[in-house]
Amino acid sequence: MSYCTPCPPCDTEYPLLCEPLETTANGKRLVVEDSAACQKTIQSPVAQQVLKTDGVGNLTWTNGANGTVLGKDSTGKVEFATLNSVLQAGPVDLGSQPLSVSGATSAAAITSSSTILANGNSSKIGYNTGAGGTIAQGAGAKTNSVTLNRPTGIIVTDSAALAANTSVTFNLSNSVIEATDIVVVSHISGGTLGSYNFAVAPAAGNANIVIRNITAGSLSEPLTLRFIVVKSVNA
Image 1 (cartoon, helix red, strand yellow):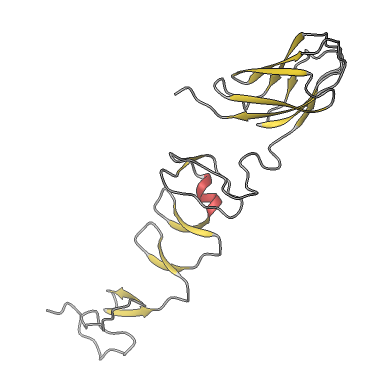
Image 2 (cartoon, rainbow, N blue to C red; image 1 turned 90 degrees about the vertical axis):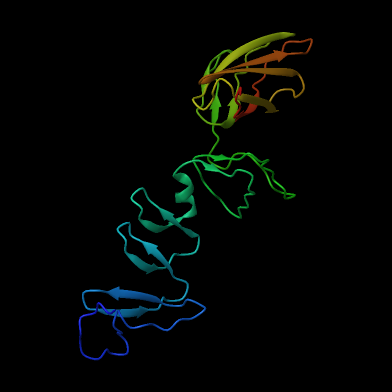
């Protein structure tokens, strides 16, 4: 039974809704129905375009640039977005799936139940340029507190004398540090390498760093220390 309103013979480009269309094993075109005009039109996409929805039931062809993927917002609207923008929307749970990235990718957080490895002979896991900072201790004592709100950085201590077999403690105020984190400190230059031991006690928003002179004589040297904050949890 036909529900089409009788009308003059169809133009070959615009068959009636009630008329059958040719079939093909490989879909190439989109049939757009206009029930008001009782006709169908055939739309062919430009090369490398895909269909997207606008959240209210409409479909259109669209084309994304290199490095973009389809994303859907909270209203259901589908648009192309950069990979970084998609990741920035929230944590990405990799589960047991491998992640292969050939370039910089930024994200609020990347979580995985699998091991994350740098498998190239020059690959690294760590902090990128811009993550660190440098702070110098105030003059007069190695016990003076410093503030550096970065996940990694350099601390240059004062040159005040530290007696033989004696320890001093100073506080690093750092909003990045959480109570369960691990803070690693390394003596990289300045003073006599191998003449000191270091210990760190992290707390929420800060860490106490202990420097001990393990030699038999007093040392009056500014020490250049590098630290990193490593995320850790209790459970």
